[in-house]
Length: 332
Image (cartoon, rainbow, N blue to C red; front, side):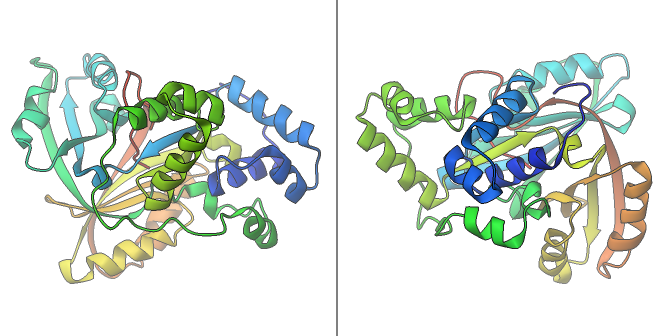
């Protein structure tokens, strides 16, 4: 991401518009925002070129019969960065971050249902004495994340503007597991690099006609198996402090507490997990003081929360997009 830049209201409105539908024509966004097509196109090109915004086509792993895992790797201080880089280079990881003063790595990975979890969680990690501990928790249910990006909570757009840009029909949950063929995967590899790639490029990659590419992409998006996400510099919304929360919640109140988190403007991702803690969240705040206020107000007022562990994100090495070849995966 770009090191330093002053972002304005148009940047924020554009990011929120793209979160509502990342493949919307610039002409439609411009019409709703009351600016010219050229203004929207130039602004998006600048943000994308400088690395502040990326539109990505992502898949939802459960729709492919896959299970998601949250993995925490504890390392010696001198080796954490090197181990994190090795994990980030893997095709089967996403959202790789250094936390807890740079001695712990947090990431998302996945496996096919029925796959030996020990092979996933142990054999695929770097075998080195520098790794002093590994914990893994299976994601049982996602409350917020995926197609629901944090920018959708922004008030950069008015309610009328958001309604005008929102897709006319919500993605319908699939009735069963989706099977991707080779053409789908080639198309998704292109979308993983540029979620706004035109139909001609998608069709060429898949070896289909443009009408077939249009129809198949619409099917995958309508099923919920594929969605268009926006990876953006959080400073666009003046958010500097990021942290992972690991909460212990009374089981009877887990669903209600998870749903409550989805309403918090600070929450970018929330899920129920297995393990010693059973609720995980990713939060973004203006600064560390705002994070303190969030923990002592919104989180503190959740009656079922028994314990909270907070791990500030020191450095992000990888987000939703894959560094290697293959279909990119989601997280928060």
